[in-house]
Length: 380
Image (tube, rainbow, N blue to C red; front, side, top):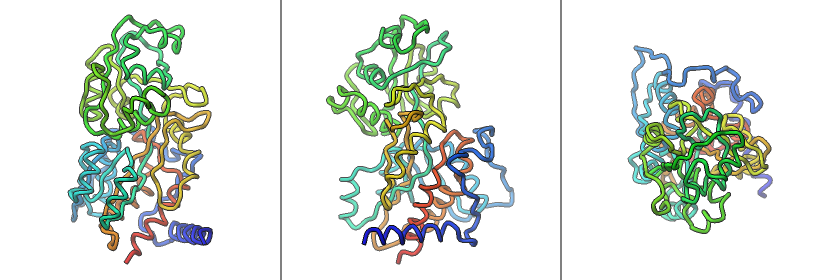
């Protein structure tokens, strides 16, 4: 029965996770200690030490999400030194990451927006298997450029939707002022900036706005990696760095970027009110809180977890996950070197996540992943 199968899978997962001969296995990172090794105090721009004697013997080409690019760069450098396998990762956006893994130009594609059911169904009808492997979690933040405003601004989901719908157009609008009592807001036009390329960050942003704004949902703007923005509202910028640069050079701008990009570019970012009515500062802890109530609902190998507008007193509501997507013939194994890298990234690689401003995968999710990796290695 289903219960017996679930118990068997769990037993396999536990056995595999505790094998003494697993190479390079580090101790788990407990949920209650998201940064046990003090990685949050590391320089996020630092590269791992390079061993001049190490040389990559094999190169795998992958690409996609710019959200995950900072930690992917760190991981691939370190993994190349340890194993001789170099993963050449291209931060070209989630949309191109999915295209690349489907057409075979990428051994895996990273995305912040999971593939849709109909897309997966079509691939499976064509004899191919699709697997989403969670990598890390993070926050998408509203960022802005308002010289002289030193207090962190507060937003509700409805307010953010109205700004991107073109309904709230000036920074001293009464609705913004009501969310920020005591803050002197300028009488300045809001310059909306959005991603013009296919972006998982846009998916997380618009998935959230769809959940919290009836008008956004009615207009059928999102959620999607690339949306048709309301006429006359805002200007587009490509990739996370492009959007961050556009906000930096435009006084009065508002945009949305990953927390890591906001911090790296010294951009201010706002608090957002969650569904429990609390204004929450985006952080690793508030992203982990958003995942806490969602992950227990994972079934078997279905790892496409929406984290936006999650319940919980301290949950940050615009949280998301990045996946590595594998697409391979159903009767064959995926590329073993790719599976080995992803297994390393979801285990040993997790200890580097907090220092690079990503939330690591909880232990209960990694145990479920172990059963999947075991199946992929044993598949005939």
